[in-house]
Image (cartoon, rainbow over all chains, first blue to last red):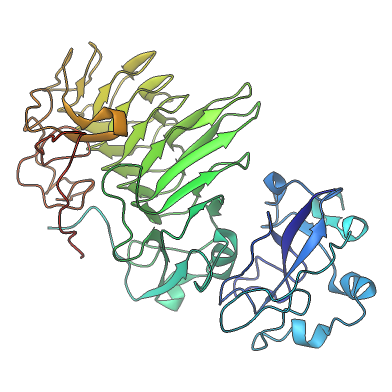
Length: 124
Length: 325
């Protein structure tokens, strides 16, 4: 098992092309995120065993191919506050306790296996 | 006179790089800015910092753009490369997709150094352009390598009227520049340099009109140029016999500043390309007046570098003040 860092949209984008739950980034973990990446998105570590390939994140008929319903995430992490995730004005990165002033993660969450929660829009 | 690096109207600038920047993932910025920029009367710009060599990639698509309002990826002030791939904002992507794919009209990638290192049965492109006036300006595609069955090309113009200016392709395992598309998918490639590709330097395919002016190709494995260039192509040069268009210079010997360091600035002693370019400052398709170093061109040469330098020991080059539009 390898660990990856994933970014999921928690708010639909201005254009509407990105919807809540869309997987936007899968990457090797970094110790930080950007100062504009802490709202509208949730970053956390995942077990990559059954993750989609990062080469396939773009959809053919939608901007993003894969989606993780936030309710499913909350079922795995009960402490997640969905209202805060959905608030564009709220810097809320609880899984890695990311500092909003620097973007630095203060902790690393135990990688979460979300493979059972990923919807492939092109298989629906 | 316009710089090759166009600026958008009413630019909203975000930063990209390591810790402390606005964005650390190109895709997040892209997703946040793929809006109707024309209605918003705003251009979106991502200014990148040389904080690391980034393993990242992006496709720009879905934004509504125009000649005034579009998206740009470019270095922040003081972060630009020095005309070689050894400095500036650099990406080395290991993901089996294009590195930077401009798939919308008018948007530009400027002065970025890119590499793709993959193991894939697919062929990929470091800078892929598809859209009306989708542009790569001052970019360097270097050492693209595919250890699988596919290859890596430096630049490719697909559907739409792409623009490639002041760019260099060095040592990619496929073609340096590849042109495709059907009729009306015309492109303009000006003052570019393609060296040591595993395929062609400039490879023209399809039924579109691909115009090459002031392009230099040398040491490319299959041949320097291939295919039929557009009728107004002119002042191209090659180390072999293939340079197309009017006023072409074939079987040339070029003298560069320091090839061992991937420095393809023209040496002062160069007799193959220096001073043999045509003036494109009033070009009807894409007028511009600066080279890969963003120096105003006084003597037009062939290739990405217009101002020859005196090669010093170890292959030096002069540091020039960068002009900012």
